Length: 330
Image (cartoon, rainbow, N blue to C red; front, side, top):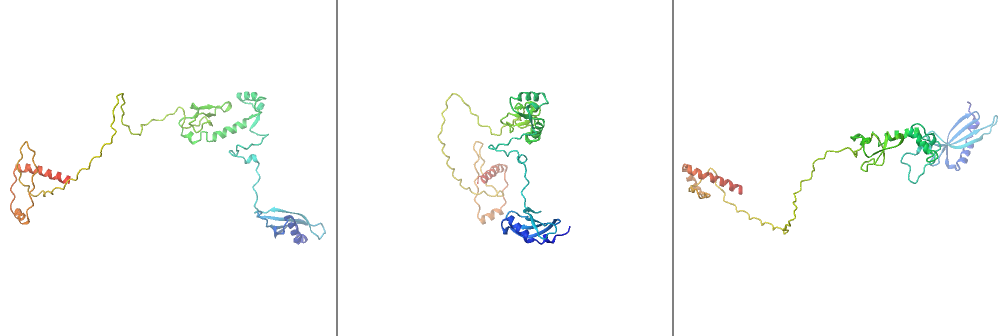
């Protein structure tokens, strides 16, 4: 495709058209490119300096008639380039709404062709559904759940937090179908779902599957262990009044400190002779001999010790026990 020199050179005309479309000369930037679309048809692109339109460009298309040397403006408008900042694609409200978005003050619009619903006289299939359709016709709701709607609801409930895959259901020993607080639904949902009526259950007032479960089952029990509280003192109650003395007891006086006793002699030093106690009298503690002076002690060590008699040995043994008792008291 041959390039048109007349259209490619008409930059001033293209810029004037872009400024007229933008409404301000400051919003039109430098010339970016010129593209030949067809014979005698060229598009010029100018940068857009408008705030908030990053990557957008001003597009001006020029044309000329055959055998004419004058260019004319076909169109001029703002278009996005490849890296333009664009708004997200529009999504219908029915596809944007999610469970939990509806607030108390909101109202959803009417859906004429809702695929989940059918007219009351169109509901056919099971016996209870036919009876429901006959009753609804002209007397109650104009539309009821169809087969597709019931299947969708059952699958969503079964996969939810009140189905068999919930943590409480896997930890439960018995399913909800055997619980006295389980109220089955009517119609075709009776064999799969019911309502929980136990106020102690986390599923109270909610629809649960028959194979759901929790720790508030009516037929389960746990082993009762012994109490960990200490046994209280027994209290005896009778009809005889007993006077209680509520006066505070006086605090005991502190005992005087024991005086230190004289240190005992070493065991290897000979014990002084003591008189033999009689049978009726308790043997008194033997008096310890005073330590001799250095010269006297040297003489005593030089003299041989007298041999102890059996009676003296009997007296020495209680003396040793008395000395041990005095050491412990000190």
